[in-house]
Image (cartoon, rainbow, N blue to C red; front, top):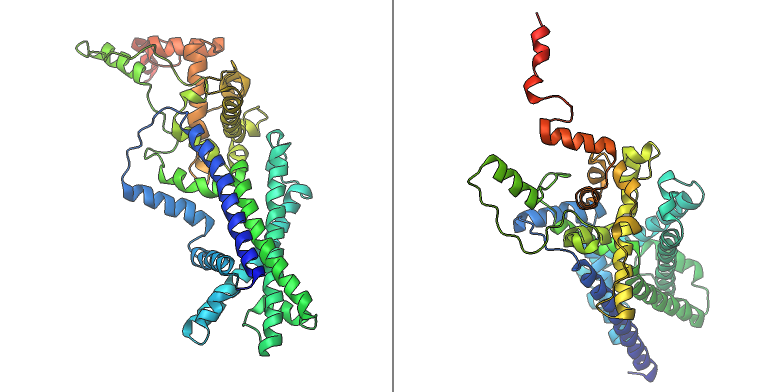
Length: 429
């Protein structure tokens, strides 16, 4: 093994090791942030969880077809990096039936890469030229806007490096063996540059290989800071899908006990541990599942586009609720790193991030929950914040207070006694 090869292998191990270390630290921080939330028991079977994950996360991303090809590519990257050789799988399979399978897989990856390249350009145009409405909302200004374009630029760069690597390698193979590997796209490109000097072809191939690897590692480190974290978190989020119908409101335990004691004098209200708190004022009061929802949001905006309150000009945007919840966790985490675990900034999710005007605009129609492609529920967070606003802070409009009083006294929103409810029937013939 040559000295240069040893240097390449050491560089590969250093680059991959450092990237995984940096990424792990951020993933650990996100895990700790999600655990800020309260416990939530999700009573589902393993079969239900697996079915949800495969149908929603895998199915939506159409990864049933991509998994095998992606794994082959990753395996080859690591084998090539650790051995300092290239196309080691091709040479291992050469002459056997696996050679054809290998060529098919690489062709599949290349065609997929070309299609992704085209779609990525369309995605950039949708944001910058065609200005699709749901990508122009106020909550997407600043970092979310740059983040989306960064990822699209990464994808274009990564695909460019893939074709540089494969076309340079194909040209060298043609010169040495008189024929290519059988790769359709990179074989075509390789044929175009096969007249280049060998030194230049090696430079193109090596630049593509290292550029490809560097982009994968950059993406790994960048991912936990980006909205594209949903690529990974969509799987645990769908695995822990709540079993109840979408948008179903859970009873508040303390209220449920009070109602039971009113209806059944023999019911004994269980003792409570400390002061009873209604709803959520900050992320600590939300469940871990709601916090996982916030990190799993891809900011696609389908929830906001379907929200009738938003459509009629109200301030509410379910996407912003999820982004605010995530931002609040990140701010707390940053504060703890700078000032210690007892950090407190006297701020709350309710009021400092999410306004009361937004919460009051929600009609609980469930459209946002229905629209989300990965079973995220902005409604759960909205309900918990609104419960705290009304029941802990007693902050609700006078019109709502009248309705609440009627519900309590008349078992209906209207100001009629239950005994008079059917009087209108007396006027019927």
